[in-house]
Image (cartoon, rainbow, N blue to C red):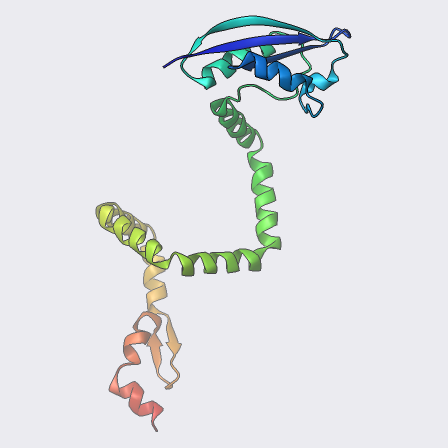
Length: 201
């Protein structure tokens, strides 16, 4: 199903030009002449001259807006709003800005995180409580899906930091019962009869 789309121009006696698009030319012209008109045509000096400069069949309103934007890009108009906003172009511009200002954005983020440490911590805690089941499910699925990759990474990390890990594993801490125990063994030690008997003395 198609419709007729119109590209029109309005010229003021000041020489200013406005370009617009519509699928109902009569109603659109009436809206420009309305007392409550908030369009950019209010910048033009009356009397105004109206002219249809393009009319053809369209399937999508987006295509009509694109044609209107072509006319806007090639004429000096009083239009304050773009007819067609290319989201992909915006994304590219944002990405380019982030690349060009990588260090600055990094520093600003660091400053923000430092100033709002407690707020960020609270937000994370609230978010975790609200989405706990979902997070745990996603985590479980991720570990199942990437079991071999994670296993390989753990092995690589251990081989790279073997000496450091072994030294750390030999470090003993004092338990509340008075025994010196290897830190990694502490939870198991607390279940032993020796620990329980020493606490009950």
